[in-house]
Length: 615
Ligand SMILES: Nc1ncnc2c1ncn2[C@@H]1O[C@H](COP(=O)(O)OP(=O)(O)OP(=O)(O)O)[C@@H](O)[C@H]1O
Image (tube, rainbow, N blue to C red; front, side, top):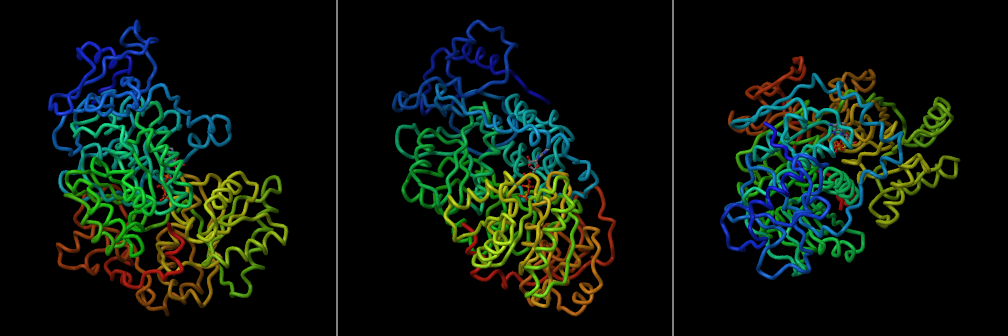
């Protein structure tokens, strides 16, 4: 069912319905709308008109809004659980309509080669991917964006993004979230999870379904309705950029806050109004402590890279934010967790934050996409540099115009990153680095320079392993392999995104033997060729690498941990596939993966050197 109405329609309707623009703060009646109609639309026939900003319905600049009277947030009272139903309204965003919204698509339009990309995407590569859901009353998936009631403005932005059809995770997750359900979603890297949580949040805020009235603006505290947390500054910026595109001309205002950057600019942005706050946990806590943000009104909470957000490094901070900072409790707010990997131990922790949730797995939990060609080469520590040099020379020689393709090189330590960068540069390969010891300005500059191709080699620690969506990364090199197989999945996922193919090369030696088994299994699972020597290493290594290597969701049976709990297993004794869930597609079950352990305990998580890469 589609309830689209043009903005001109709704403005005219609201003008007819509402005798005065005032709304009592204590009113419990249906949400009221401003009677203001912008001059250029006053004589407009109701059905005409471009998809347009809903915020224009609230013409009162915030600074001029009467205290205790109508606020930009309007809305009747009533408990806050978001859900399905309810029509569109035009008052939810409500920031100053005189303020011109910068067109977030302008940059794409000026770069035609990049703008073409989404249309050229081969999302058919994801078509027969197996999908599993579990939980009560799972809303059915959709096949097209047209079937989803996101509203005209968001639909127009989807068109501007050149998204022709939803990716599998979007097909399933969006109806679940529009249905008001909590969700734990696991889908492969580069498969469109950001839009899967952004669209429902934006559209929910636009609907402005019954929610408590937000406090009047005028104080210095911002009251977002949606909160999106991510583990790194760069990822928060990226989500913010994406969300601004999806929310363009909807009136939903998206603000970002992250550490390492001057807080004053972020405070100014918050003062101008915030509907959705995208943040890293550290900076958010700072803002909460300064009382510049309140979480009282949160209706939507999304954790991107949720398993990282709930691992030992972040979990206490997240728990504090979610449980001790006035955020509405689970079941009142809607909570959504997304990642490409979801170890059972983290699923168990995460369930504390969710109410009657649906578990969704697109592909096996923690699997890599077979769009990425994975190679593993045996390289002694002392030979790594010359081996990398050979790869880069060969790559350059094979490229169309002798240009270096974008290559992301992962190393273990920040020092190692600096020294490799220096060595590459002194050997004629323009490189830059991103890691936790660089200033935020340097990090952002490095990323820009890499994206633009000025320095086509980026040497990175795990700070760049998750979430970053950098177009045209052709090759990911694991110069130093990570300790944890899930980190490997995220790292190689920086290439082979959105239906494009990519290449990942790992340098393996005896120091990595604890990863051998999981690595070879992961590769087999993604239909990659596993070298015989790696299989031999795998055969000799103890499973799970002495407890340091967990495998998401247990032994290739990426699944809802609740099933194991119910079955009394907890250790992966069941089939290894999603035995009792709703499934579409098939895993072509291989007995190899049937049953098995959990892949090592959570206890042996990263050492401090690795967690320090995160914000
Ligand atoms: N429906 C769609 N059609 C075309 N392109 C899409 C669609 N949805 C998302 N994309 C594009 O796919 C790319 C990957 O999306 P996104 O960054 O959300 O992936 P992800 O699943 O979050 O990956 P990761 O696990 O690495 O964080 C982005 O460039 C995004 O614009």
